[in-house]
Length: 64
Image 1 (cartoon, helix red, strand yellow):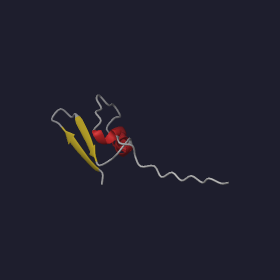
Image 2 (cartoon, helix red, strand yellow):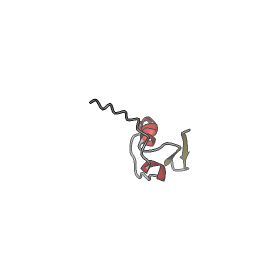
Image 3 (spheres, one colour):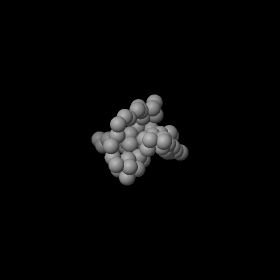
Image 4 (tube, helix red, strand yellow):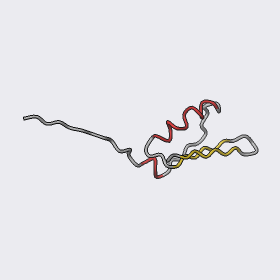
């Protein structure tokens, strides 16, 4: 299950942290929120989860 934590400090700086989302899914989850907040990203840090590839369902049919 994905979880998004948003913190806003006294100066209005926003920090968004996503957990439970593998690969680039975290970027998809926060994209709309980032746009609503002005779209200006001063820094981005990725967790270990970002570097985990999402499971891909791949079916191959081989015919004779």
